Length: 588
Image 1 (spheres, rainbow, N blue to C red):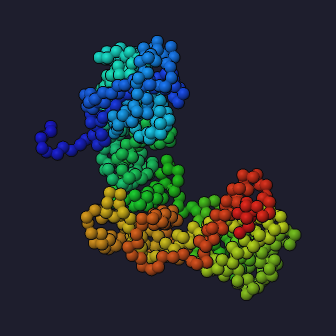
Image 2: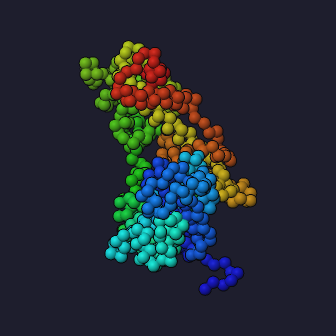
Image 3: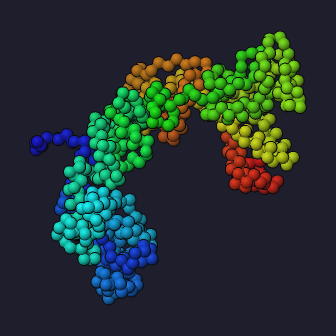
């Protein structure tokens, strides 16, 4: 029971705009034909309603600038003589758009009416507003059975609902009849629990009653950012997702806006929904990644196995070689999503760092080379360069380590020089192959060095302006989100920062390239920090990438990738020497 003067707690279905508070403009057109853009409007009729009451009406004939065909005159009764003194559409359309401003546009067979209105707007260079459009034909077919309404023509529905205005193929009469039909249809869906505009729009697609009934599972969720977890019959986690508005997002799974078959199957199995409310979207994204790794939900397709990447690492032996492994060491490059990509990159790095590719284990004190395949079968790079003793071999592994740390880019310079040599010798396919592999090396190294620069910081505090005012904060330690929070508008931010730092998670890094941080979490944090409006509040040390790292090769890599795309478009046909494509992709 409502008490005057006392604020009333809104129910779940009233949190969106209630239908009784929604303004609708019901419009009907008469035209010279059925083809928008070719035929023209001859009459506009519109009725503005709210809460079941008529607020205003608009009706006018429109001069179409041509004669009206006889069969149209027979249907509508509008003759050429009637419209000869009427205003043209360029005068009428702005008045109609002002009349309908801020309202939901309703029409019987809405694509027909909105198609003509949009065509008129385009022809007169009039901006078309982003209306929410409701079609009473579509709504009627969703609400009424075929037995009850074999036809959903306006005249048939007017007879079915015994409306107060009979459709006459004149714009205002038909708009008034459509108003009555709309009210009758809304009364029907109200009995099915549809009470807000959002629910009415979501109701239109066909949704099973079982799926719709599960909306109650979202009733406890807040209007706040966070992570949601769908749980199954055995309380297992079926699906994990993030949202800036938990209640609104989760409720969409129980409406027609969710069309994915797997998600409908998941909703059918769901028995309850958990959530973790977060300070802002970044925290929600990080928590989602951690929950995916912890639960590996069957209905999530991505990010469930963050530890399954592949790494290229130096083996621990007298003559170290490159090996593709799952677990990184201090001297590793990665992660790679596929093992084949990692193997390709390892092969090219072994060639240009001069590392052995033979797999036999060589005891300390022995020489390398005796166990390598014959030259005719392709000897390993170390043998080709005569690096058979431990002392002679040592520069190769050391160059690889310096390369990873961004202290020496000699391998990339060697690759580039070789690409130029092959192109100059008109071995274009070989040049393209090495160019693409070099680009893969640059991209992998750039990603790792970018993330390593972030994970090298023991602590970084960053801020971003909140959409509603105030600030969003993140405390990042060794590439992990250790704490997150917000300072609302009008609240001094630094005490909030101090509290977040004091309560932040303790992080114990390891000796791997990313200091134990998840590559996906570190990547998410790096992308957030790359935004233009981010502010650095404090940092434990300088945040930078190595001067001779892959970052300085980004421009070359972009040109190489563009050259690769142009090569594919030309079906591997090599560009002529000196051409733009040749300079772009085939030479540095």
